[in-house]
Image (cartoon, rainbow, N blue to C red; front, side):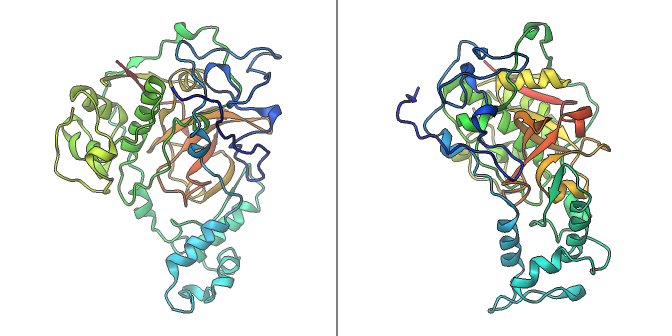
Amino acid sequence: MVSQEGAPHPARGARADGIPSLLPRDQEVWGPAGERGGAPGAGKPHGGSGGTAPALGPRGFPPLPQAAGAAVRLRAGAGAQAEHLRAQHEVQADGGMPTPQGCSSSPAGFTAAAVGDSIGAGWCHPCRGGRFVHSRNRAALSYTLALNHLADRTPQELAALRGRRRSGAPNNGQPFPTKLYTGLILPESLDWRMYGAVTPVKDQAVCGSCWSFATTGAMEGALFLKTGVLTPLSQQVLIDCSWGFGNYACDGGEEWRAYEWIKKHGGIASTESYGTYKGQVRVAVSLPGSPSSQDVCNITAVKAAIYKHGPVAVSIDASHKTFSFYSNGIYYEPKCELDHAVLAVGYGVLQGETYWLIKNSWSTYWGNDGYILMAMKDNNCGVATEATYPILA
């Protein structure tokens, strides 16, 4: 293990953009072995009035020095997103923009035109999507929207990103051992990024392979808790090779089927050893950790699973326009069906509202550097409905 001594600590402070990456001291994030984000001092675990936080078990370890670098740098506002859109749509040497539907032709006027009320209906082009974004932001919801790199995608193209199948077939996962965790005092907030247990946000491209990113994310976290080393694992090998277990590569799949493939083949390759993600099927190979999986199906159980076992693969509804353009704040959408797989890397409370900290695989240009806060209220978007995590042998 790496000593905590001399480890750099990120600056702390309240964020204006809605995502508490590193919270102020009165809202400290709890981590392994009851430590407050690596900082000394007392705290208040969930359900208690003070005192010592509960230990994580025999694996207690201090935050690694690289935890500061592993914590995702969350930006305020959508300035970087607008810059990215300008670059994507730049068509002239002087920075001119395409001008369908009367949009501004200058980069300086792009953002203003994109959020104006005068553009026609629809949302496939950034300017038309901007009208929707502006109208929703005026509704004073618990979250805000912003244009991003998905703004010029058609609904069909966006649907291709949501590859979480629901076959209805019984999986071989073990039920969550609820009785084992009866009486467990859970911390109010937890963010595994602070401990270096989460790899950087990736981009699945135009491929319904979200299930492979959720699977590897849960595996990476479990492996980190077991070894103290964060190893990026290959989504591509699951896309290429788990067809025989009922997954369909870019046409969708299920995490439990991926766990079955990993178990059958005695492990999963790292990204370094197998090769980078291609967003398409390559030639299948068999590669030499043997995980079993467990199913979690209620909010308290999912929180306990995240606390004891690290990041958890979950399924959500990502079909709404509000999800595509999410920027910051706590997302809440009452009408939900499961169609997308993501990774729950933590949870917490913001201004009295409980949330899940979710890592998506639509690049850092989506959401808040690739992350979203999803409300726990009413099991919003089904986060706790089909959660799974691996148990390493």
